[in-house]
Image (cartoon, rainbow, N blue to C red; front, side, top):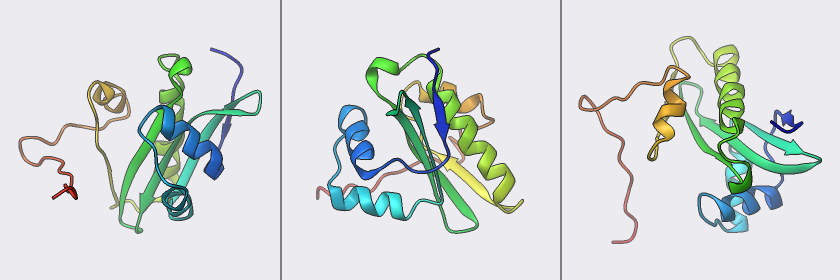
Amino acid sequence: MKKFEVVKKMPSIEDYLNIRKHTLGEKTRASAKLAIDNSWFGVHITIKDKTIGMGRMIGDGCTFHITDVTVLPQHQGLGFEGVIMEALVNYYRKNAPKDGCLTVIAKGEAKNLYKKFNFEETAPKSVGMKYNNML
């Protein structure tokens, strides 16, 4: 793994937009600002001062959700996703109330990464659902 730095804060708006564009899908600048401003905790990874991955957690003090865990394509599969998750989960353990609830939605094989951090599938008892605003 290349020499990298874990930065325990959200990336800049420009870096957030760039990483989203190349991984999870584009967001507007206004949406990126809202995401960054309203995150409970964020982390990003840099290599030679270039942001190559990120993740964040949103929450209201009782319920928390991990989102935007992603790494630029050329750095995927090298362990950076796990480094991001470790930073997020450690922050949650140290700062959230003991009776808090932490969730994540796994797309595809991402569930294998999340299982390494003690996340369990909830189906069939419950399932994740997403609002379809394209109606």
